[in-house]
Length: 112
Image 1: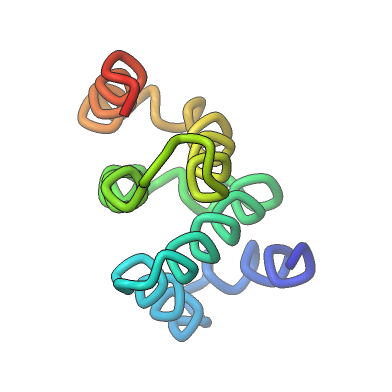
Image 2: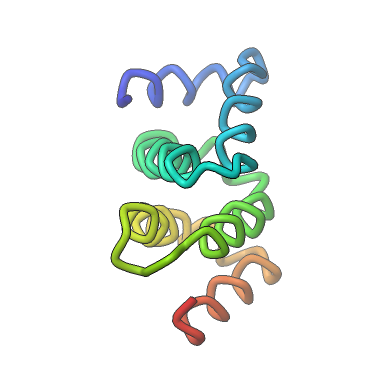
């Protein structure tokens, strides 16, 4: 997975790997919990290795986290863990986007 993240760092930034973005979108729009878990795990690795590719489009995280939290049955699940990991990693780049910052604060304040 780290190899894919390293590739993504270059390919997604240049817009030369649209299939990967479509793959991630399909995971997050799936009705299967395991697909959403895989999507969030993938995002946790991507944000660890290639956070800068998301810096210009932080608003996409509102959809991502909203989807993840709406899919949660309990906060101790795999999805809950990778969602919190990903939120922690993206928080520094979301500070400049008031919409995303407000959403992240709302999630933390409400506990879900």
